[in-house]
Image 1 (cartoon, rainbow, N blue to C red):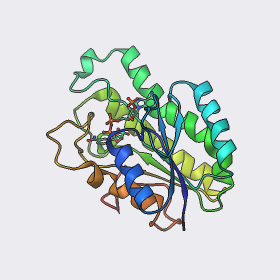
Image 2: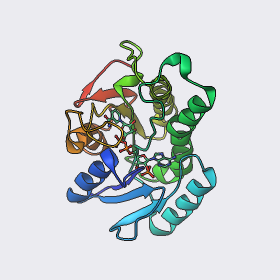
Image 3: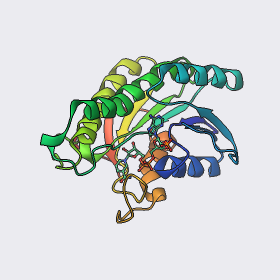
Image 4: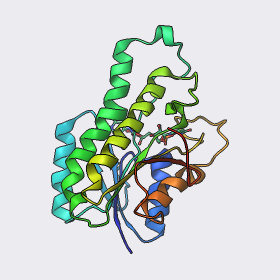
Length: 221
Ligand SMILES: NC(=O)c1ccc[n+]([C@@H]2O[C@H](COP(=O)([O-])OP(=O)(O)OC[C@H]3O[C@@H](n4cnc5c(N)ncnc54)[C@H](OP(=O)(O)O)[C@@H]3O)[C@@H](O)[C@H]2O)c1
């Protein structure tokens, strides 16, 4: 079935690959970017996860073009403290990271929820990271790791809250991927990094909800 799928941060990296794969599979993909490029093709909305007003304007624009949303893929995020020691982590940087990666994701989900409610088969996929895992914590980029742990918490809460609305919600980890964020030494291509998100968005059983996935398998929070 052809789905209407909104992907944040679809202008580059893993979000770009998710968008290309889903569009090639015949889905109607709406990408979001902070800046829209002049040579863009397809459907795009412009907003910044930090700016609730810009997200609301984009949702109004979405509503003029579409009646419902089948899948929301919350992919956009920042890593502002790469390799930083925990001792040097200042509160401003932690606040900014949480504002984009966690509260920004909540802003987008909350704003587009009315369209998801109209789907009848809606899904939310939150692009998280093993860096947020509590059972095997990583010692890299503490603000980023904390934000992904919090995003997993958001996912779990959304799954409980939206279950009654027939919306499945899962988090996934793409692995270490060659992007601006992941760097050139990462082992995975953007297409490989996109795979589990694409699966959760389309092929996975709708009854799967409230989980954290990597390589299409459930992993520990
Ligand atoms: N790469 C990896 O190894 C890796 C590993 C685990 C998890 N992840 C996760 O995978 C997702 C995609 O990562 P990536 O590697 O593709 O990153 P990326 O190449 O750095 O792309 C990040 C995307 O997020 C957007 N973004 C950042 N701040 C934003 C804001 N305030 N408002 C709206 N959009 C914003 C960027 O838009 P602009 O172009 O405007 O900056 C860009 O489209 C992220 O959630 C990341 O945490 C990545």
